[in-house]
Length: 377
Image (cartoon, rainbow, N blue to C red; front, side, top):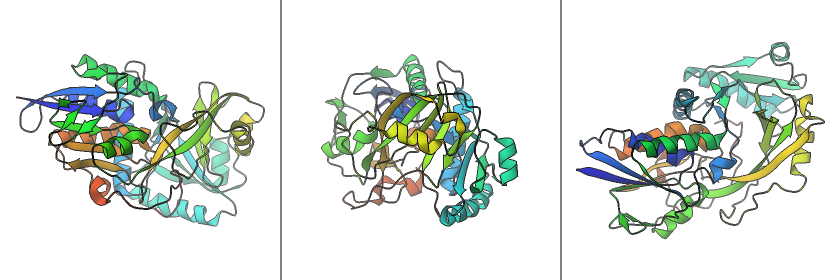
């Protein structure tokens, strides 16, 4: 007997699910697994190809910390496989003087992170300045650094795992938009035992066409790259709400979050006029390396929000699975979330309870909220 599984979406999450299923010898019932990966465009064409590639495990909640740690572990395992490279880099997050709420949140979160096994410590100003001289520290009220972190080119991860899955026997259909039907379960009129929908910002529409409503909204984010020399860590300035990381051009800086629902088919993929220049001015308060740097690129992508800022991961119905709503943390958690989804399909795992996609009815009213927040969570 053979179990047939369709995975919709060849971004980081879908490619991980397809990879893990393709390399599974059999499911929990001893059946072989046949995998088909559908992609409406090309592998990593969507949000994955526009993601920033910042990866860390600095989460204060136990489930998030465990997932973050597992994802970093898998990124390290895949390093230098195919075209994928994972660059180890400390992740620093900070609050500026006068930002009492975020200062308190960082101080409160650190012990909780440490309780969950996260290697993260607080840095005093002098230590900060000595360890990271390329990052301004004289206006910092509190800073923390996590060691299990790094950055990469997200598209290279998805392409590598999709290629490996195909070599292992998975069927890869690019330029193939996929629609789901239920009772019986079908994709593009072909019957499957299981279907995993990992189509990023399009997931809500794909499932709506199949008769399922989920509490998710896509929202637009922006980033830019700058030609400069930078030898510092990844940094998230929580007070001003931007992040930066080393990049082949010098620096990648982002957020530019628009806290409203976006059309996944009709959003502007170019950054707003003046965005890169404004972000450069803001980021120059954190590192002088960017002050006179040349802008090399600026773009927009999509993230996905949920009412409680936790993702929707797991079974929506018998044989129908979903993974979406990652609040800007989708790529960095894809190796672990994809692994979990594959294990659920194989009958080896019951899922991640806090991320149960059926915890909402799908008709909830909620506001889109910035994903990279430092608060009391």
